[in-house]
View 1 (cartoon, rainbow, N blue to C red):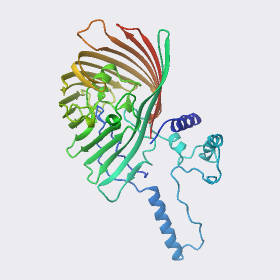
View 2: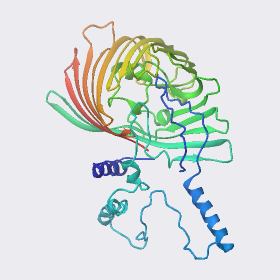
View 3: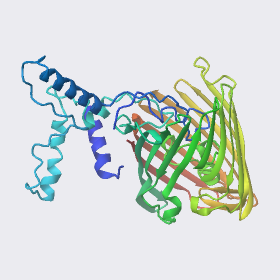
View 4: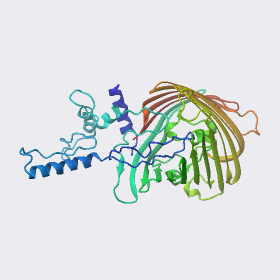
Amino acid sequence: MKKLLKLILISAIFLTPTTSVKAADYIAEDLFETKFKDEIFLNTNSNISSSKTTLVEENFETEKIAIENGQISEEKPEPVKKKLFNFDTTDDNDDDIMDNAELDFKIFELFDQDKDDDGVADEDTLFGKVVHSKIRRTDVPSYLFKDDLTFKYEKGPISRIQTYGGFRGSMNFWWKGDNYTTEYDNLTTQLGMYGQFRNPNYKFKLAVNPIPTSGTNYLDRFISDAYIVNTQIPNHQIVAGYSRVQTGVEGGTSTYILPFVARSQIARNFGSARSLAVKVIGNYQYVDYNFSVGSAGRYIPSGMPGAEFNSWINIKPLGNKSKKYGKLTIGGGFNGGHNQIDYSVLSGYVGYHHKKLWSNFEVAIADGYNGSRGVSANKACGYAATVGWKFNPHWQLIGRIDQFDPNRDVSNNLQREYTVGLNWFIRGQALKVILNYVFCNNQNRQDSHKIILATQIMI
């Protein structure tokens, strides 16, 4: 199993684009604690433990003073600081030029260099950190190397930051009748950071998408998130900047915790968008809410084509910490504004999670909409019903029935998708493999089938 983990990790690192001081708690630790899954965090504890490098330096100085005072008579060799990933570099000689074939095989030496004498991966090495990782949660984004990529600053306006890199890619096998195609899709490649200012009530997030999306304006999609959060009011977050619009539950959920490779049809048409706005978010035991006012433009360069108002409320009859009876959430919301046209979307949601069971139902109706796919004046509607069963912390079987009517004024045009998926959470959401089968049943065009194999890695 450990060998398999290492093979998967090194494949992800060398085949996909990717983007240090150990902290006692992490800036993004409470990410997605609210039921609406907005990309905000509440953690305000700024207590950070000393870094390994600082501890090593202190040991050097202590030992040096002791020797000078004659407290240590035996002369000791000068200690060597530990490198982050502890790779052996004794043969790292620039004069020893290798051709490409030799360089490829040189990589395999890392497998043995990252093991102790007993053949087990060292916890201080790159692969050892993954093998020995205790990441199990799947309801929030998690990061493989958050310890090493969290930094503390003693001076300046910023007290600490956590940097990260995320990648989702998929291989698609699609066929419709006799037509069969395969393609690779770079779903998301992202670099970003969470930060906390010297005043712990102020935090920020900045993330970019460095890989351009085919057929889109690069500058429009380059900025993924750019906002500041204030957590001074208890149980509340005030957010200002460019962030996700809470149009429906799945439409406002982070890409990195989606149960399937693709969002449902109502989520990808009505939601999955961002805008410049000011939000007020509340999170209590029996209710959550999210209200925002901002621009109807979907990208920072869009400016202000019109105003937009968005609201979402969740009622939690069983509270948010019930283990005996599970978690029941009943929610609803409205998204409306003006961007070339007037648009309005009403959404409803019911979700129930209990132990290994995960289920929800979401419905939406629109009189014009403004989602990630652009503005549409159509009167559309749809729903999605999902049920999943997690056999253990690593394996989940899940299925979804998804229907969308792109125009209620046109008959015989329903689009239905039936999806069955298998999720392998190798290390929570930080390292996972997704396998989906999708049957597309359309009333006005030929049916099709798709098999999608996707990988996700977050560091």
